[in-house]
Structures are given as C-alpha cells and as structure tokens.
Image (cartoon, rainbow, N blue to C red):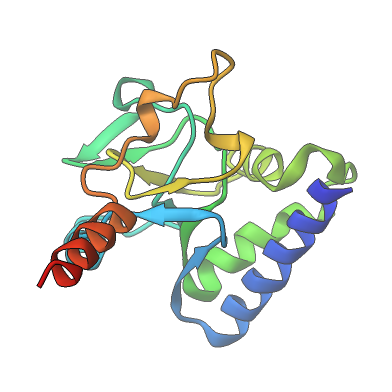
Length: 171
C-alpha cells in the first residue's frame, strides 16, 4: 500500500500547485541534489518549450539517447519513471497531471499514471544529466547491487557539505 500512499501524497501536492497557480518544484524526502542546482535550473527553465507541463529534475534509468533533445540538457521524455524531483507548470500543468486521478488502477504507482497521461496531451520533459537522485532506498540501486550510472550527480550537495564541514573542523 506504500505505492498508493505515495501516489495520494503527490496528488495532494499537485492539487495545491493547481490552487496556487505557480511553477513549483516537488521534492521527495529521500534525495540528494546537485550542489549547483539553484544556478542550473533557472537557465534550463528559460529554454523549456512553451508547452511544458512537467519537467523531471531527477529521473530513473534514462539516457539522453532514449529521449528527444530540445536544448542542451533538456529532453522530451519517452518514459516517465520516478517522481522524486520534478517541476509542475502551475495550474496548466497541474490540471493535466491530475487527470491521472481518473485512472482506475492505482497500484501502478504515480510514475505509471504519468506515463499513461503522457499519451493524452501531457508535455513532459527531463533534465539530463539529472540534478536529483534518490538515496537510501532500493530505488537507486541496480539489480547488480551497484549504483546505476545514470544516477550520478555532477556535484552532490551532501558531498559538498561534508567537504565544507571537514575544512571548517580542521581550523
């Protein structure tokens, strides 16, 4: 039932986005982000196609060659797996995203419902390389037990903080 609960949590958040009608970043609590995310995302947002409804800041098992490049670092998605970090384009994107509530079988998870929505005029993009990865869950571990290469951050924030703290402690 964790999948259903997760889906309901995302639905509540996206309903709030619809009411606020503001571009919103949704982050789950089990992730790490690129230390430079605050400078990278605004630049990419400026180059998103006007039709965007959702942009995934983090994704799973996707490579650039699996998607349609629209700008350096921005790809029209062909698959929708993982919802640990994404942006919704205000009420416009939220209304389309919430259309998944009508999908009768909630057991497929929120990402499966988004995959379904993408087939009905839902414009979803992804940033590659990713700027957010799941940590501490099985979701970011491949079947071989090794970290999936697609999930490597260019500059993990947790690593940057640890390095900063170690320099501070040595003074």
